[in-house]
Length: 88
Image 1 (cartoon, helix red, strand yellow):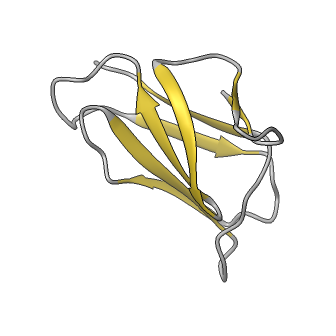
Image 2 (cartoon, helix red, strand yellow):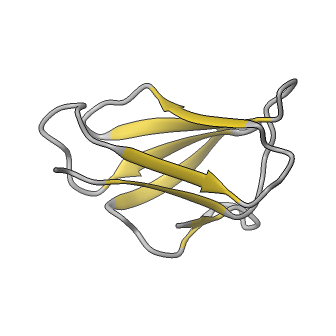
């Protein structure tokens, strides 16, 4: 879980996350502690911001992925972000 109110973002529980980089408004790159063998791993994303209508992950590699938060008309920085992944 990531707390966005800090800069840099605070990682509250790692879920294999080593760091989170603010890559632009509403865009975060999540770097992984342990590399996955491929890009076939699930990612979970959530936010408690009611202004966000869409969020998704893209750019998956075995070492990182990017998450984006969107209001329907613009990307938005937000607090209360939860992201994570798991190797299954």
